[in-house]
Image 1 (spheres, one colour):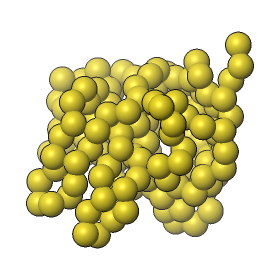
Image 2: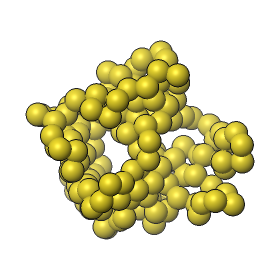
Image 3: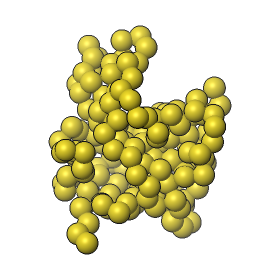
Length: 150
């Protein structure tokens, strides 16, 4: 499968258009139920290769989403390896192979993101919310979600 390196996330020197998706991942023997946040360059997300691993991903708690909307708050997040582009456009629930659980699409939107040059911070802005992420350790992040009022 084609794999995009993490440094291909091209927003270190400005703000770039992104596709954003959140899925609910059911509990398995190995994991508690959680949400997965996916972010990818909008241009790359339009690629026909749905198996291209272009989506930056973080595991976040279920409490970060209520009724399909992000909730104000501070959340621990765990960065995951890049995921396939298909998660950015998922419209139906999918049972993953090898007992890895069920993923259910919860939210999709467009936004703008900036990843710091050293990869230690992330700013994401959508029509509904702003997310500030700070790397705490190798794969642990702290996300602060603020709902935008119009």
